[in-house]
Length: 187
Length: 92
Image (cartoon, rainbow over all chains, first blue to last red; front, side, top):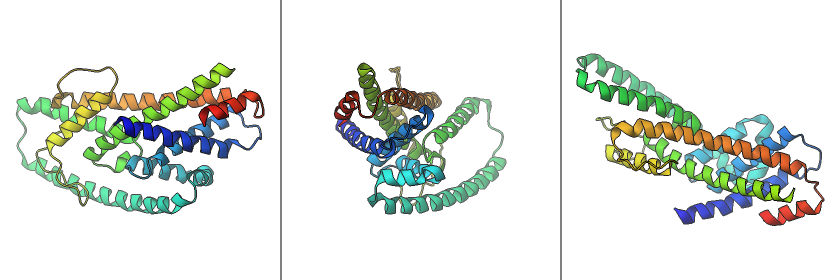
C-alpha cells in the first residue's frame, strides 16, 4: 500500500504543478475565488488522472468535470491530448452503464416487492436486523453521493471505490497542506 | 448488509459473498481515524459506513480549505518575485 501511495503522490504532484502552470500562468489578475476554484479543479483533475483510469471514481470525476461547460476546455488541456480519446470512451461507457444499472434496479425492485408481499410478517426477533439493514441502506445512499460515480455502483464496488477514494484524498490533502505550509513560511 | 440471496452484479463479476463484504468493511474501518479496536460484526457495518461518510466529507472540506489558503497565499506573491521562484523550485 505504501509504495503505491508514494507513487500516487509523485504523479499527483507532477500533474498538479503542470496543471497550475497551465491555468494560472496567464498573468491577468484573478480574484481570490476564481483562483481558488482553479487550484481546486487542477488538484482534483490531477488526482483523478494520476490514477490512470484504473478506478471508477477517477473516471467519474473527470467525466463530471467535463460536463461543466466552462471547465470542459480547461479540463481537456489539463489532461493532455492522449487521454482525450479515453475519456470520450469512458463517458459513453458510463452512460450505457447508468442505463443498464437503472433498468436492473427497477427489475430488482419489482422482484423484491412481490417477494415481500408473499412472506408473512417477520417475528419480533428480526426487528433488529431489519433496522440494521435499513440503516445500512441509508448510509449507503449517503456514501453513494459522496464518492464520484457512486450512484451507478453496487454496494460491493462502492465500498471498494470508497477505500481507494479515501486513500487518494489523503494523498491530495497531504500534498496541498505541505505546499500551503511551505508557502506560508515564505510570507 | 448481508442479503441471503446472491447478488446480481454487473456482467463478468462473480457472486459476492457476505464474507467479502465483511472483509471490505473491516478494511474500511482500519482507514478511519479514531482507531477502534473492535471486532467488525454486522451490527457495526452501518456505523462504519457513517464514519466513512463523515470522513470523506471532512476530507472534502479540508481540500476546500486548503484551496482557499493556497489561493490567498499565492495571490500575495508577485509572479516575478524571488519568492515565487523559490516556491516553484520547492514544488518541482
